Image (spheres, helix red, strand yellow):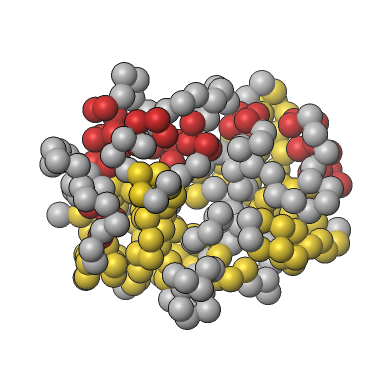
Length: 286
């Protein structure tokens, strides 16, 4: 049986994850997921790919308040409401192929805090509900939108997929490297590649494509240091047309809402032919 093992939110793009026991499903992603993002003064998005120190900033979410701190300065805590109460203005921001995305600036205090913590000038912006950032129409056919996530609102990864990868590595890696939304128990390694229509409770999810992984996965979330794994090993059995695939990008219909919970069962309604064949030796682990 397939079940939800873990649920994760990332309130501020490319900063620490928040593990939750339940999450509200919205079209753009889990509610409060990646609605905030850091940008440079020109509006270009900033991530761990260019600033590894972002891995050292932790985040919690409780009582409609986001708390942020750098591990080197745990007493210097920034508190943010889940929705800015008094935005200071508007700003057009760029994230991957999305240019001129309408965002609001949060506060001068937040800008100063992050600029000092990361030692570079930056601004904290928020995506209001009125902003619609379209998903690639090669994969989204109903006008679906996404938050400040890279390209898709949800990422499903089976725990078995990570377990199989770790069997190939000298040093095992944590799931934190891959920043999933939902971690699935009970599947076989990379089984999620083939899931086309997934139902959890009253919510219908749609797998659209495997997730092409980048150098962010090589940054140790515990230290901020960059290495060669997991991409080096994944390239030996998860490479497709010069892309390294791990996990499944997933979306929901534009009018979808609902709640999902850890331990909840997952039903795969339909499957498709996966882009890659599964490993020859697949562990039946949960």
